[in-house]
Image (cartoon, rainbow, N blue to C red; front, side, top):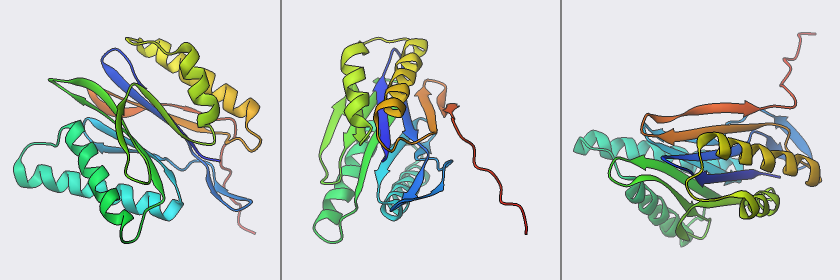
Amino acid sequence: MECVFGLVGDGFALVAADTSAVHSILVHKSNEDKVMILDSHKLLGASGEAGDRVQFTEYIQKNVHLYEFRNGIPLATAAAANFTRGELALALRKNPYSVNILLAGYDKDVGASLYYIDYIATLHKVDKGAFGYGSYFALSMMDRHYHSGMSLEEAVDLVDKCIIEIRSRLVVAPPNFVIKIVDKDGAREYAWRESIKDAGVSAA
């Protein structure tokens, strides 16, 4: 029951995701970070099959780093989104990845932006977006409360509203969420919203 959602505010973009690693009826861990820091000013939130999600996001991250290493300049957010979309489209005709992505970034000349990329390589620039079962509730909350030019405090309050709605309405709701932001100062972790913590297994 994965949930990834994000939005663009006044000079920043925010991505939040659940942190549950689930297979069938089993929860393997509840602190899996599904929002990757792609580079200094980009975030990549992903949902989908665990193997595809990890392999594809790491592949994109390393290629973004390789481009910067070879050329001495980082990819713009739009360029990174189009590269990601191109790789998904190429794989779609060979060995498709079951992965949906929200790519957020900040560029000096453009500001903050958010791109919606789904598993069949659809690419859209959006102000708000969501994937997973939690998107049914997150999108309705954002439709009601989102407005352009939101402050960071307003955006985090909206994310908290989405998390509360998901926890109270989704039949198998993930307990923990991670929130990350990207702005002129870079991409970074902002907060965790935890209702349970992973307990270490004591030795027998």
